[in-house]
Image (cartoon, rainbow, N blue to C red):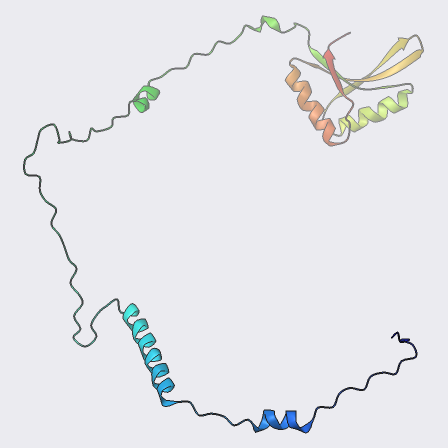
Length: 195
């Protein structure tokens, strides 16, 4: 038999009868039997005693005596064989400290002949207009470094280069380049000095 769900009537909830409520509320409580009470009390007392025993590590509270630790004496060897005895511990002596105090280090320094005899220069810019080169020279002068503007003729016309130097060592030129990099002049190049 097939029924149409849409046309079916909703089910009415079942009403619980008076018998189910009365049975739940009317069930009498049984008293705890004395045997179960005594057994439960004995288990509780035994558990408390076990905890107390563990806490006091087996000490007797009534007499105040602690159990004596059993000590056994190590059996002394009956005969000492010279092969079985160990020699005395050697004293450690460190000699490297004394050796380092008197040690002299020799360093081979290459001769200065490798370096070129010409000094170094640093070029920070090359401009078509002299006014732009003079502006860069002024910025460099504010950093406490002296610069010069050179006019150089080329195939495309005249150029104005901002040159620093001469420097006896490349390290001096590097120091000035780092000073200029801190203020935003990053295009400086270091070369050998040219007239």
